Image (cartoon, rainbow, N blue to C red):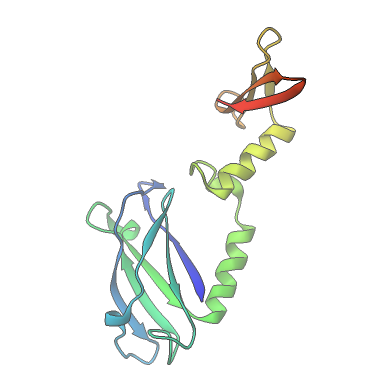
Length: 164
């Protein structure tokens, strides 16, 4: 089974809380497969997923093309997302996502891109530590936005760093 991911945005920001539905799903030969369309569920941060297996309905005869409708709260190109279900497209999507810049999605809280950005900034970015309290702050590329505040404490000779 393959998991397909789609991203909806509203004016460029992640669109959460949508209930996307298929407005069309067809075989590349033209046969309508909308009645067998897979359910779409929210992951978070504007990301949604659905699963399909090559060889099982609706992807049992040919490659598929479809359109997901993000709902009336979105407009224009942000509302309707084209979807292609083919092994070749899945390989291309995977490669494109892996090569995509972290900064393009780092604002999506809880996303892999946000976590990668935090690690990158913690290692090579700006950090401060207050001597009196030990409080550590990790800043984003703008050197003003605090990505994470950490509070070190000691218990029975063991250093503990809590995320605040």
